[in-house]
Image (cartoon, one colour):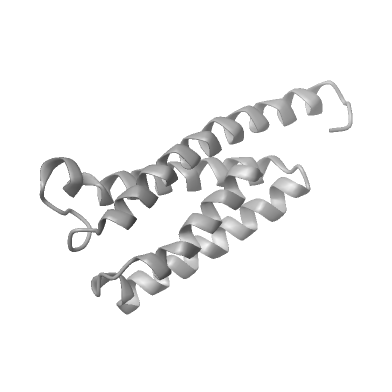
Amino acid sequence: MISLVAMLIIGITHYWLDNRKDTHQPFWLIGSVLWYIITIVAISLVIKKIRLGYLIAGLLAWGTLAFWLLDNYSFVFHKSLIASEPSTNIIIKNFAGTVIASLAIIASHNGFHKIRDYQKKDRPV
């Protein structure tokens, strides 16, 4: 839950830190809105301890991790794959985000299986 909220906060700060014009195009804004909606849905389902919430959180975290790593591709290989080259602030935000997304992947995987084990034993979660 904490890692999902942290990913949400990092995603929100993206628009204050990013000065690339490509990321403010309608396609990117629609993608961002969908990402926020899916994150909020995952958080609300995880609060209720529904396994689907952990599954959505894990898939969202994998997608976010891939996106942030691809955005930092230019830092290593000096060629941008997603948009124009990111600033230093965005590179740092992306690296911090990859750590948080990795924690979200681990936590959602563990939560998904923990809920399954409790359901098999007919114990309340």
